[in-house]
Length: 576
Image (cartoon, rainbow, N blue to C red; front, top):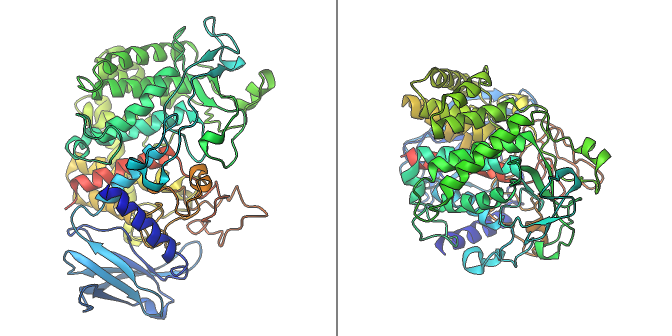
């Protein structure tokens, strides 16, 4: 229960501190940094010259040496930022204050600096579990009764097969709620599991020792793998045994209101089998079959997952045009479905990832040929809809001696070098977040976390410390060294989101949100802007609203949290 008490305390501290820190000019990592890590603080240069004072929180004495690295003008807002390195700090807790009358910020230096927030971000998946009660001994005050048992899910007319006609029912329990809503989506689930398994494979000893207090804790399997298995079990139920195709999602026709799961009563459906869902399913089942091989707690899973992966891959090969187009589907089939689409007009990247994972599982050269035919020409950061880079990661470390592995390594390192080079002129001393395109829907995960993961692969491949430093710098950004001053993970830091777009956090009657959730982050698109929601700024890196109505900047999602877990666990495993 130690972790849970820590989370409660952090959530309470964040709640009381947010209003007091609204005009803060000092920006720093509010969670913690490692003794061997560079300690960087950013100050609004207009605030009395951008000066800071650092004191030991216990003694009140001045500490460290302050070195100004540069002053940089924001390319968007025009604000001047002073980037400061604080040198000579040993382990301890320090108070960092600007030149004005604002409250000081806390800088914590110590080993395992990101251990608690890694645990918290993984524990967040437990709160997202569907179909089971969330128990007080694991969840504290965020406990709740079970909802969405999903033991009588209707087959939508778009999803029929000879063995499963429209209106028939299947059982499809367990799995994670996808985001702020209560539906379950194969495409996003596959991405989420895939990126966490990538990190696990490179940091097995670390994750094997990580205890996050879930019902399965104490068995012979890493808690990360136990939590992932909860969703894998659901994913297996989403494959039609008649032909091997995989349903795109399990959903209600319309989003539920902001109520608790037990109060949701819409009929739920499995909807259309899609080529992207089937390839993603094939990829993650093949990956999991390899990683869970000979697992003592799930002895039958690996063989079952391998068979399921093969069947899904073959279905996708035979149905290349089965893209999920919800608007077109609604013209033909009823009831109409208006929930998240995860639509994608191109399946080549999913095919590449699936072929790569099946090659690594089986060694079959036919899969290697399929992967080579669909390999990307350059590296791009992975997202649920642009997933090729998960295959690139795998080939770079697991097939290094092959031509594909060599190309994957070259692409990955070239990309890593390009973003690391930007740090020296960055306003917040980070590899990511230096171009307007870095901000948008889910940017904190899809630029900063996946950028950090890519740099950690580069560090693994080369041993060059600049890549590890880059990943740590991206974490610094997430945890407060940014334009808004928010630590963007609920329940952590001095100033964190209190009103995420998350039905569980809104409807549970608890003032503090469910902890450990990464919000989407600054989004200049402001797709949710309206009569009841206005943003304080339209600048790319400031376009954030801590409001439950802000699905464009303040929603949570399993793919974003999965990227956070993957990056933080890896950083904590290798940092000193």
